[in-house]
Each structure stands twice: as structure tokens, then as C-alpha cells.
Image (cartoon, rainbow over all chains, first blue to last red; front, side):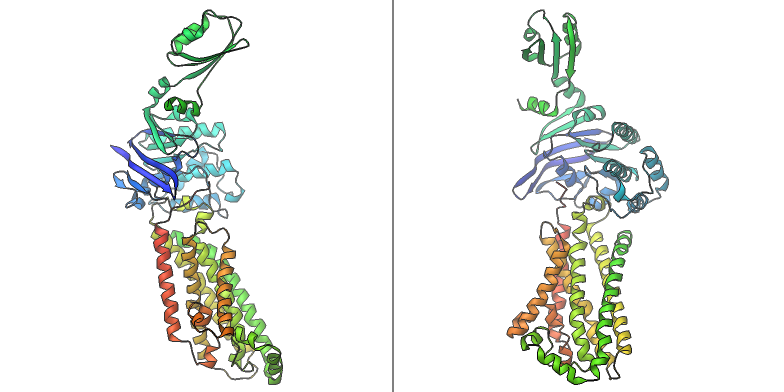
Length: 290
Length: 267
């Protein structure tokens, strides 16, 4: 069953493009990555699904219900963490979370405590006194406290230190194991690769590709730097190698293919240093643009 | 109820400050009255020194300031400006503040309809206005009984004069709301509010100076000119109807626009 179904969704802000003709569907229990550079339309798509903004054309349904008509019902089961978190400055963390919980049926006092403990969040402080990272933690707790069936994350990791990021990912994975579907928007390929099953790539308002994460990985180039005094043979002749540059004892090239074969090639030579890098997101896009 | 309770906490403090300020205003004015009332000639001297235009602008023509109601009319003029500013601030802020402070992303992603947010906020603002009005009634009657200088006054006339203040405020509330929903972003609530409140006052004052009747249809300062109680024996029913129509139309339009509004982000 698909949890999210977006069909030809288009949003223009006056003459400015938000997104154009976006269609995608997210299945139940999936962690779906939504990746693209800043300004590509990731937030626009999420805000349309939450009916914070209204589409120029096209439709979006969640749990099989129209996002605009049944928005208030759908949102019972959605947890949303915006990319930039802002809360009522004068409130205490505790009161804000209580206020947030008051919109859902049931008692979530225990759950708030539990999540705050995991994220090491002090409930007695005033929102105004919190650092950006701590505000983000408040956002995580308020987004997850009602055990939503669909979790929407809009660049959730900015402002969190690596340790907290890991705790946060663990939380998300646990919720996912318990049946929650996750829609995860990001501009960092690494974290999407770590978590997601499938990924949609958006650029300049258009979906370029929707792909299984494994396929995407195989399909992308690795950047390889090798420091060596001499090489046996021409690296450009090796299958999968392109864009070779030789600079002062260093060879740089892009590689696409089986990584074991590459390593065997490297081992045949006497090398001083090897560096194999993930391509940047921009490079992945360049690839999909070719 | 949860949105209303949160809103009212914010608004109560503001309503208190306005109530106290308005009490001090009435107290200051009315405490002067007994010393003036003993000698009518002082008033004549004071008023003679004012140019005719000025008196017209303040709506003080045909008012005998030596009477309790005449003197209070003068006080009402300043009170009305305060009431206009208060209602305008609420009008411009209640629907726009969450978007400006970016808390709209929090509130509007909760499982509620926008109409619930709208009516909760409107109800909280109305509560604050009613509280301020009630406090002003209390202040007025208290000061009247303390500083009447032994002169007689009819409490009923004062009640009529005060009873329309809430309508007067709803005009500014409604117009503020619809303007705040018609523009992309209200950067400063205060400058918009001052603009609307004093703008309407200036329209009213200049209308009186040049004797242009038509101008009086657009400003509530004219609908509810305090001296009309003395010169005409009450408020003009037609004006009250116009005012009520503006309130209904502006609040409905604000509701319509709020439901269809695209909530902007930080960037």
C-alpha cells in the first residue's frame, strides 16, 4: 500500500518555480530519501503535503486521503521536523511539548520523558535560552512524541553533533521497525545512503530519478586519487576509468564499476597513498544530467 | 481550547497594561475637572485661545466643557485613540505573528483545521478587548463619582457612550486582520497599527476642518464622535450600521484569505 501518492504536483510562487510536475509514491514501511541541492524544491514538496502551502496544480494524497481536504485528519498520524525549527520563545521546553501533545488524543507524558532522555534534552529550560542544536532536539521530540505513522524529515541533521545524529538515526530506524514510514529530505548523500531504501533525486523543481539506493550506489562514480612514483600501464585503459589526470606523481580519475577490481589494479602498483571518495551530490547530478 | 488558552495567556498581560494605562488617563483628566468646574470662565479663556480649526479637529465644537459630560468628551478623544491602537495591534498581529516568528510550521502541521486556529485567535483577542472595555467602564464610573465637582450627570448617557467602544475596536481589529492577510509579510505590527489608528484619526479631524461630510463614512472616529451625544443626543444609526458592515466584511475576508494562505518559510 502506498502511504504517499503525489501526482503531477506543481507549485509556482508567482512567477518563481517551486516544483514542477512532481510525481512519486512512497510505500508503507519504507524509508524514502528525497535528495537535491538547496532550492531544488524539497521543502516545497513537503510543505505541500502538509498543506502549509497550496499547489498550483496536481494532487497529493497521504494514507489515501487528499492532503488539502482531509489535511487535519491526516496530520494526526504525521510527525514533521522542519529544516529550521522555531518555537514560542517564552515557553519552557516542557510546556511546549505538552502543548504539542495536547493536539493528539492520549497521554504522552511518558513518551516525552523517554525521548528527552534519549536526546539528552533538558525539559526545564526556556526555549529562548536553547542553542540551535538543542532547539532541533525539541523538534525531534515534538515530531515523534505521538508515535506518527508517517515521519517527515526536512534536512533533520543540521545543527546536531555526530553523536546526536547517530542517536537520532537510531530513533528513526526504531520507529521504522515499528512500522512507521519515513520521508527523509536531505542534501547530504551520505546520510540518505545510510538510511534509505529508495531515493528520489530532485533538481530545479523536477524529479530527475527515483531509484533503489543500491542501484544508485552502483551507478555512481567514485573519485579515486592515487599517489605513486610509477604506474604499470595506462590507467585510462582500465574499464570503468574516465577523466584521468596525471599531476606530479598523483593520478586522479573517476571510477565506475566493481570496487574489488579497482583495488586489485591498485595493488599491482607500488603506491604511496590511496584515496577513494564518494562523489559530491553535485557530481552525482552531473552524472544524471549527462 | 488549547490554542485559545495559549493565546489568552499572551493577551491577558497586554489587556492589563492597556486597562491600567486607560485608568490613569481617565484619572488624570477627571481629577482636573473639579478645579475647572468651579470657575466656568477658565474654560472660556482656555477655549478662546484655541483656534477654531483646532476645536473642530478635536470635535470640541458645541461642547460645554464645564459640564461633566462635556469634559469627559475631551477625555474620550484620547481614550479612543488608545482603543484604536490596541485593537489595531491585535488585528495586525493575531494572524500574522506565527508566520513571522516561523511558529506557523509548528501549529499548522498539527491535526487541526485552519479555521480552528482562526477562531481561537479571534476569540482570545475579543476576550482581551472585552476585559479592557470592562476595566474602562469601571475606571470611568469610579472617576466620575470621585471627581464630579458636585455637578449632576446622567450615568445612562455615559453607558451609551461607552457601549459602542467595542464596535469601534472591532472595526480596527477586522481591518487590521484583513490587511495583514492581504500583504506578503507584516514586518512591524506597531508601525502598521499606528498608521491605521492615527490615519483614521487624521481623516476624521481633517474631515471636520474642511467640513467634508463624505469623509465621515470611512472613519470610526466619525462614526462614534463623543460630542455627537451632546450636539445630536446620540450616535447616528446609519453610521453604526456602516461600522458593523465593515466589521463583518473584513473579518470574513480575513477568514477566507487565511484559509488559502501559503505559509512562507525562513528563506
